[in-house]
Image 1: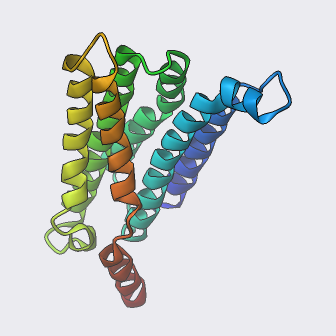
Image 2 (image 1 turned 90 degrees about the horizontal axis):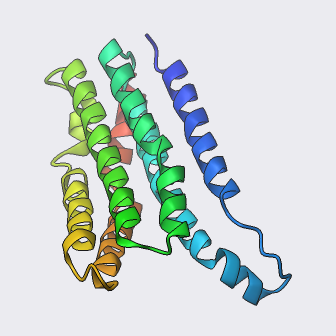
Length: 204
């Protein structure tokens, strides 16, 4: 099976996820900046964080499937598992927002991010195994330091919110710093992947 249907379906799901998240934002009753900050300030921040995560996954997914010509049933199911994890982001984002960063919603949000990171790694691994020892995707990701570090940072954030200062907010702020730090890490461009994609397109 060619990748076009999988990519189109994935793009549609990610677009819907972003749409649902923005619809969760509350419209201020007052028509001034103070009303915006009071009603939607936290919501805009959590939306921004989740939007960045969805954008990162869309970008990486786009690059990944530039190096894939055919997909198997395993790839389809692994891709659906990733989309399932990402489809939970509107729910976990809204809960974290409405709770004003209570520890349990922050932990659940972190678990959502961790599950998505694992699902993406599984999808990547399945594709590499399908492509064989000369896998162009394996060449592109190399040691995959970002992919290995992301779950570690997510887990560190989850544990911080669980065990550090449960009656206060220190653990929660450490957790949020871990989640934001992971996003920032992925925003830094990896030129190696772009280079391999261009080489692969030239060859094919």
